[in-house]
Image 1 (cartoon, rainbow, N blue to C red):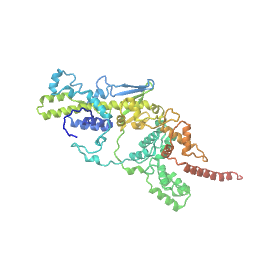
Image 2: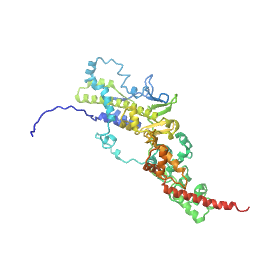
Image 3: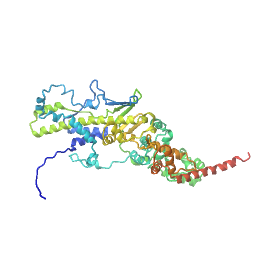
Image 4: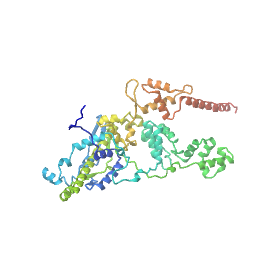
Length: 537
């Protein structure tokens, strides 16, 4: 075997993750508030970037919008002077001037026009970069920065707020999207002391859910840590904490329900209502004083950040839905071509000329990346509204099964792009403000090969079967599986057990004990009443 040396030419294609492509990916998954901060830093760093005028030109709409109508069965994009038109660099200044022929312009800029104003290659590269999976740790927002703006404060642990603490428990307590939406809506109403408004009737009406569903979710939220949170008044807050300590007996219940007498120090009336002696009432009052009347204050008063929606959804005049970007929070920047033209005539050093050429390319790339980001968010939001039109019309009970692939195939994008768009983005609707990712729900196949069922609908069906069972005929998980398959729902036993545990429903053995015990208590209390009624007057 002879070893020889030879020279070969090979041609191959590869995607190079340039800093501009990584920047486009980073911009796509930022919220509007974070995007504004990023653009402000770029304005300070790049001398060729400048803020656009707040007032749009004549005949130009303030925001990019899209309409979805049930009548036409699709969505009709209607760009009206949104980010695409507002981002055109310096129209009022340099586009109206006569810049001469192509050769004169290239001589003035000291480079070819294709290098400065490349259209299709940059946009194609941005789309390819959005579709590509992240390859570096720093792309996800972690890791250290390689530039001079290294900030140690970025590594300081953020203070956990009461809302964050409750949201973490919510993600574990509920798996159904409808219940999570109701729970998140109630958590947003909790004040810094840990209390909810006394009247939650408007919450059910706003969400399009029944009052019973809101009460069921509220009952689970009141079991969260810290004890006493999500109460609607002081009496309910103390009662929740006493139940946690297993000290909520009838005497303590009477005391909690008459806190006004305790405030007046009417100990005699309290002792009479509770049916206890002086020593017991003193111990009970001592227990009440050891409780925390404001359980939410243990998290401190952290700085609150207002949830600003990225997309607005409003009812349309034709019965459909009008999808519009929140242009008030979108940063508007322009490329100052006039300033660059003036500098290019006076710059003599190669280093300075290279600096301003890079600044021009970075500014142009940023403008196009912002435009592409706005159009992508609008396209994804419009498709979500089209897929989940039942939720906007009837409420959370009509959520359809939806995943990233369905939306990606409909708008001809990659799933990773849709995933980045739905992260940290919020949609303001007629039923409240929700994160885009909450509209994606799991699906369960049909037993007869028909249309798939929503996971939330299956959970609701399981709960109905368990609620209607008799104490003498408790349904096991296997029996529930058989009844669901008879209804056309193909589901495994372990899935039924998972859904049952997520809804805090005990096993069949524990339910049989609880219902038989409750039935025995009812019979024991009914017998003395019947004997008392048979006594002669």
